[in-house]
Structures are given as C-alpha cells and as structure tokens.
Image (tube, rainbow, N blue to C red):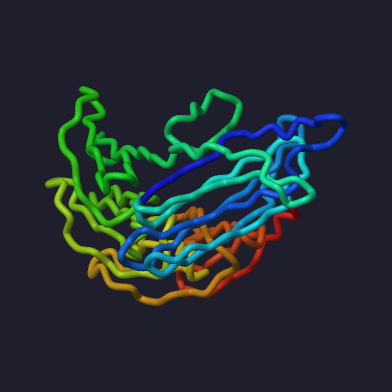
Length: 288
C-alpha cells in the first residue's frame, strides 16, 4: 500500500493570472493485478482546508488513467492512497490554454510533519490494549509493531494483510482486529501470543474497525463497497452486511446503547446502526 501527497501547492497569481487552472493526474498501474487508487483533492481558504475531489480509480494491469480537476484556487493539495505499491502518479498543472505550466512532486505522506500547518494525516494508528500494549500500523510493510506500554520497548511485530489501515481492540477477549484496505480482509490477532488467528473476508477497501466488547461484535466500514460488515467475534464470521451511504470511513460504538455510528465521507452524513437488529436506525446530516 502506498500513501502519497503533493503537499500544499500555492497557486500564486502572476500578472494577476493564476498559473494553474487545471490539475492533470496521470495514474499508471504497474502491478500484474488490478489496483485501486483513492484520490482526495483539497483547496485552502486561509487556514481552512476543504475537500472538493473524492475519486476511487480501479485500474487493470498496465492501465493508464488521466483525470483532470478544477484548480482555480489560491492553494490546493492532493492525496493518493494506492492499494498496491507499484503505481506511478504524475501531477501536472495546466493553464487556461491547456498547456503544462508545472510538474508537482509526489512524496510519501510520512515525510510531512503534523506540526507543519499542512495537517496531512499520517496513516499510522496506535491503540493501547488491556495488557498495556500499543499496536502501530505501517501500511507500506503490512506490519503491526507491538510496544510494551510500561517499558516503551518493541516486543514484536505481526504481518497482516495488504494495506493495514484501521484497528480495533476487544479488551475483554484480548483480540486485535486490523482492517486491510488492499486485501479486503480483517486480520484477527490473539493479543496474548501476537499471532494472527484468522483472516476474515469483508467488503471492498475496509478502513475502520469498531468493537463492542459487551456483545463481542465487530463493525467494519467498507469504503469501496459502501457497506458495513458485522462480524461475530467468537466465530470470526460475517453475520450480515449493511448497505450505508457513500464511502463509509470512521466508526464509533456506543457500548451501553448498542448503537454504531458510521461516518460517510462521500455523503457528509452519519449512519446510526442499531446493534440489536443490525438495521439502520437513523441518518444524521452534517450539513456540509
């Protein structure tokens, strides 16, 4: 899995004309199998960053796709998440006449500091467990690093599926669950042995994992198939799949009320799921 960004691009006027009016993105899949690339585009107004591009591109082996995006902003940036590593992305700025005026560098997200004011999200996650262990995701290496929370030392690493992205922990059963974005699966890990118990097949491009320890249920947001997989934590089987809104990403569980909240990135709303019936209880419009 590759996570790349242009970083912040300032489209400063020259002779009162912005040099870039269109962004041309060329994506080449060099993998021998199909690959999916997520494209997010943002424009800046002062210190506020707003999303205006959300694309999901699926490329056959060797396929090349060119996408053009509006860019008449003071500043903008693009992020790319590729399910597989061998992908080539070129970003050009073009003027009103369609001529290339700039070629922008594409760099790994990890090179950008969270303190830089760019607010680029580093795709690594750390969550403490019942044994005071911390688990860190590294999407590029398929590796979960396990750290002792008392001594702050590395005590092991675990290989999971391709593109690990989201992570959830059941503190009662001491099970760790990792959503593998590029392999459409969830890795179930025994927290006592740091061994993968099984791989659970879910929907396309799973991102978030919510856990309710009281019911021993998992809720996995499938970004690419606009659904949520409900998993039995005892048998590690998918009980049902619930269709939600566009591009579900985050998930939060209210254990007491047995309600699950799903943030739908593409439709700017939240799906509230009833954990007792696995049906949609209501929708919350975020208004932007």
